[in-house]
Image (tube, rainbow, N blue to C red):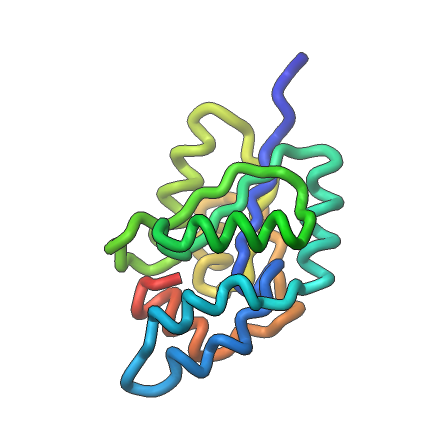
Length: 160
């Protein structure tokens, strides 16, 4: 039986509503420990959960997030709590501060060496633009909006 294609789904702003944690990274003094400690309390985004569940019907899911590896336990617990379809979780290496658009582009290139990547679901406008420019099919997750704090965290700080 041939392998199913891959659907790549981001977490923050796609399936997880991080707006309640953004206060920790607003302004000059950012409290990244508090920001990441709130992962278990993120409400789900119904639109994102529906998209992930629909994609899982015909694709193998990969959750690709800019969250650091040290948050794996809380992230896996949150995914299980939301009863999201099983999928491999790929996270940013601890200490990697490259912009999300760079990290995700490189990781997708690695994934595509052995599998067909059919679609990527992401909310970050810079990530979406970079991936589309590279020829990937992108579903822009615009249901949460993209707060400035999240853009800065993903593209300037290289933290999520």
